[in-house]
Amino acid sequence: MPKKILIVDDHLDFRKSISELLNAKGFDTDTVNDGRYAFEKIYNNRYDLILLDINMPDVSGKTFLEHLKMVDRKIPVFIISGWGVPEIQNDFFELGAVGFLTKPVRHNALIMLIENYFFFINRV
Image (tube, rainbow, N blue to C red; front, side, top):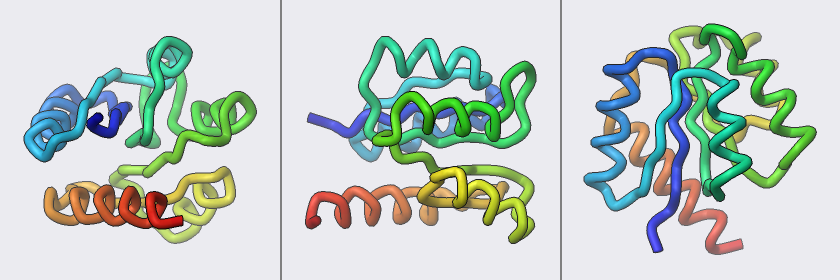
């Protein structure tokens, strides 16, 4: 059964390209444009990973992650953002994120990060 990944980003082209890339690599993906819709998805589906942008309308990545960790600490979250400042990264790691990639995302780096993460958790 393929790993299911939720992509949360307000840029349609980014969501589509990442979804197509991950689907081609054998992952099953859903996409939404902000944290509010992401909550609807996680309440109705089971995800193995969430790729989360920081800056989005309505419900930001930070607000989403804060609430997600109160509701379900088991869903791993990778932050994907144009804001790669170490202080921002640290804030998200403290909130429970398990990975951080800076935009523009190199596709091979994203695939490697995801595959390595799943390989590692399957070995534990």
